[in-house]
Image (cartoon, rainbow, N blue to C red; front, side, top):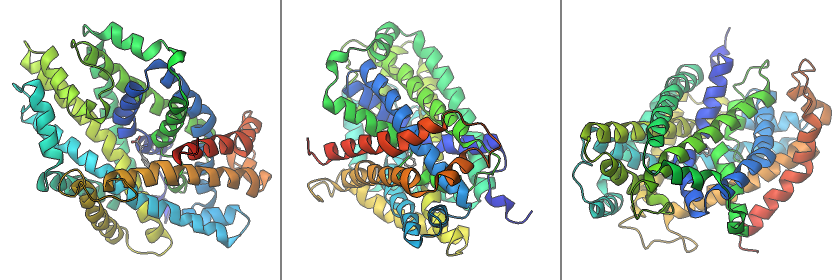
Length: 455
Ligand code: PHE
């Protein structure tokens, strides 16, 4: 059938692609970092709560808007609104957000490639604890090396996306997601046998609500957004490739569950490891996976170099897989409009978007070294990009999406999309509708006001 290549071929492929987008550095890097900084179990409890009341409803909304229109985000919004052209402007949100997020996220993803390279060449062996920090500092502030890895990362992403929806994105997810799960499982099981396992588990699973502050609540909300890739129409873009017989509610719940499980497993790997060394603390911030962990792996397996080697290698393979399945979705969200609305050839679009992101990403990378005094609104370039995406575009986008499905779209159209034209029972539909009309928008306004420092 002509055009069928522009849909995900199988139901599992569609779920894996969406899960691939969601599961990323947000789970294996940002989640442990945030959990460490906000005191552990109580943060996790709130994060899961917000996944349920905020992340999942926005995800269901994005997927249903995309799937309704089938062509591109712009077309989906205007046709679902009953033909109001102004809603088509929402099609530009994923284009802009895609450029921004891909540019800075790929910088960190590039660092991971460097660390994978170091793991492969066994360069962690024999370093002293101080050397890890010094080496990371020297590497991230260097001009050439991080930019070279940025280029490699973007090129891999570009090739996969240029291959198309089925042959690139779906196949990539079907290959990489199982590898990711296997790495996770092996690492988590090994982590349980470490001396710090008990302490790590207590930190992760016994909440101390006295530690919860306003900042904890709001960070947990922000993390649920970023982790599910919702708010900037990334999943709306993927929704256009979903077939009409997919159960969007069930799929969203599966994706959110996979995402949460991966985040928790990352925690199960990292915290027992951190606690198994005397004197290390879980709140090491972003340095956790680049300084603390390589050091930890060498120390706990000090007498067994093969295990130290294997553990480090698996860990960075896991991170690379997680990062690539997410960067793919970021490139696709920018590229899709040009390909589907303006009919520019897929490979040409991918190369152009990649080059632009390479230039922007290089600026972000330089902001860790040579350009560290260049600031925009008081932030370095990298931090500014992150702020724009995660703390500005995501909440605003999610807010508009909720208002759109809750108040603009005809309720029979929405119900029709979620029940696949009345063929599925959707007992949770009234709850979903109530959430997108009232609960989610109010929560989002609260996050946003916090980000703006209004309270
Ligand atoms: N959800 C991804 C992660 O956890 C990040 C992401 C954000 C992906 C926005 C796509 C769009 O790493």
